[in-house]
Image 1 (cartoon, helix red, strand yellow):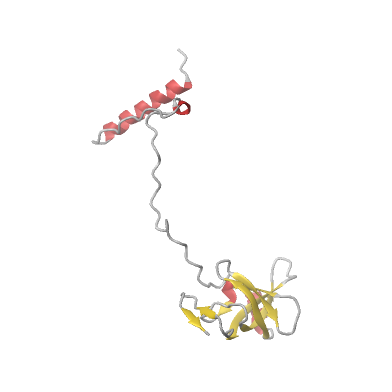
Image 2 (cartoon, helix red, strand yellow):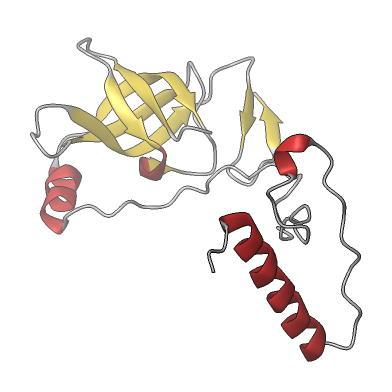
Length: 169
């Protein structure tokens, strides 16, 4: 005897439903009739899937806290032995975790990563900073600022601490 695929699917679903009802004391839910022509071949026991509960559903994910990235020991030593430079924060996006510093002596902008900011404030445009420089792997052609310290907060701007407290300067 040749079984069609829809008939076989219905038989398998009915067997699974009998097995579930034998294992639990609750009666099986009533079958829902097909709502439109395309669902005729679907199993009658299919229902809308409930989503699993998530603790973050409906909430905004908080900004990442500043953490020290993993850097090779030799690169860290070279950077900390280097000279201290001065500059001004050109831009910094806390949600992306990076920004740029304009060097005081001119030259191209220096990349700044969130993990290299020291102190309690998130840098904003116009903050005066001191920093050391380290090359960016893998080619080591570009430079990034490390051990960045805000020396003067930009006047007339609101500054935020890493914990979220807002301070006007």
